[in-house]
Image (tube, rainbow over all chains, first blue to last red):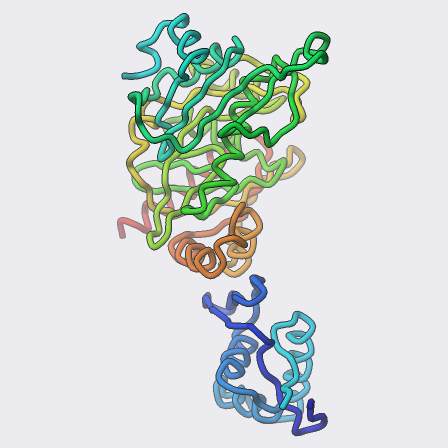
Amino acid sequence: MIVDGPEKRWQLSSYTRLEFSRYDDEVVVFDTGSGNTHVVDPVAADLLLTLSDKPHTKKELSNQIVTSFEFEQDSSIEKYVDSLLHSLAKQNIIQPYTE
Amino acid sequence: MKLSNLSQSEIVSALGGDGVALSIGPFAVKLKSRIGYVARGLRRLYGDYRVMPDGSFYDFHIAIERPRGIRSRFQPQSLFLVDGETPFKPLPLNQAYPFFEWGLNWCVAQYSHQYLILHAAVVEKDGIAGIIPGNPGAGKSTLCASLVASGWRLLSDEMALIPSGENTLIPVPRPISLKNNSIDILKAYAPEQVYGDSYHDTAKGTIAHMKPPVESIERAGEFATPRLLIFPHFDPESEISVSAFSKGQSFLKTVECSFNYDYLGADGFNRIKRLISSCDCYNFTYSSLEEGLNGVSDLWEKALSDKTN
């Protein structure tokens, strides 16, 4: 069951295991499940690394990013994370968590 | 013993009998053919390659022969066989020699998955190896041939071979394939080099090959460390331009020019990861052979300077 709303959690897609290669402001991500290779920014890479551990809500991910990158906590962060989650889901790297 | 130690008639006889086995980089290739074009091309372009003794293990058993059938009486053709199988349709008889070259490229790309294989030229000078990936129209082979004619070591004009676990490049020096205008350009730039016959009306236009330098063949067992990754763009209307290419985008472009990245999976990812980490990556646009040579040489000097400092 997918829980919607603020408690909606996200996870890596089924069979996805990620490998990373970091270069300055780019991170190359290899999805061993699909065989696809992506270039993302460090924020997206941090989000993916966090989701590799366990499912998280958008709020939890936003807080993680604020801490990791020393951003100021404001509404733009959640909007950015929201956009990022949809982009990553569209590429089938992540999916809503199903209980 | 080198192939040049055999006379033309001995080569023809061997090709028509048990075959001629050559050591080509890491590969042992056994070739049979009763087609004269093949014997002629082989003697002219593979004279400095070592003939392998009988009973050796061969990676590829290749034959270039005339197909049977009534059609062959009206339209002479040649057929490429590897281990007895025919992966391609026949080509005109007079394209038998380039058929060998193209077919051998296919064999390496299809069966040599111990390497990550990139569609790229690879050259080396004083310990600095440069990989030049080959998008169509980029001028990869022309640039490669001119660099080799200028004294660079040829590792390959067609494929970069990267083994597992090591950030090295395996040489597989072979005759450099030139197309259309580049044939005359190279012959004008380097008339002292040895060129094979020109073959017209192929799927790629007119094709000819430039023989690799003896030194490149003799040093085929000497691996090289990649230090430059240069994505070339030939545009006769543009000005020369060299710009650093981001490592992330270079990674993706390298994936695009790989024959077997998908097959290797995470292992392929890690090989390119090591490659990109060790290389300076550039986009390079040039409008003439001279600009191409000078541009690559400048990048090589910078890499050499960085290495020694």
